[in-house]
Image 1 (tube, rainbow, N blue to C red):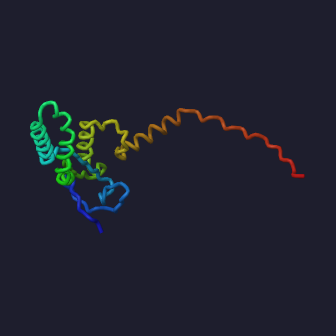
Image 2: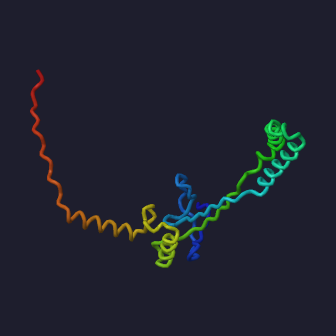
Image 3: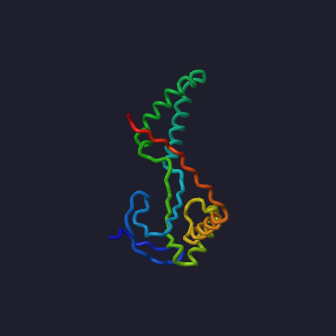
Length: 170
């Protein structure tokens, strides 16, 4: 039974999930559908605040010492402050990852979807088709080109089989 139902972000077509195939990480996305995922890293303001508090605390503690002793004391104070904030810092990630995923129905099923998908691919720099994400039409065109090129090229001569002399074992 499918895990999810998918809706095409371009056409609104819905489809039940297909076969679960864990090796590609696409859950049960229907066969031929396209998954588009945007990931964005964002700094965690809580983590930045912890770093700011630690630096201010070190500066305040170092300022208590006379000028000649400050440099010598700063390392020890920084270690002490780091140890004091270790627990909260350990449980606070420095970044959040924002993930947005949309699904696009199989481009072979709709000319409008294929056109919009190709425009998006070109806009994002995927217009060379080297990533294996082409349509069946692209494959058919490539096969035709290969067949035409093969017809133009003469086949290499068949290699002659060397004569082997077989001698009976004494």
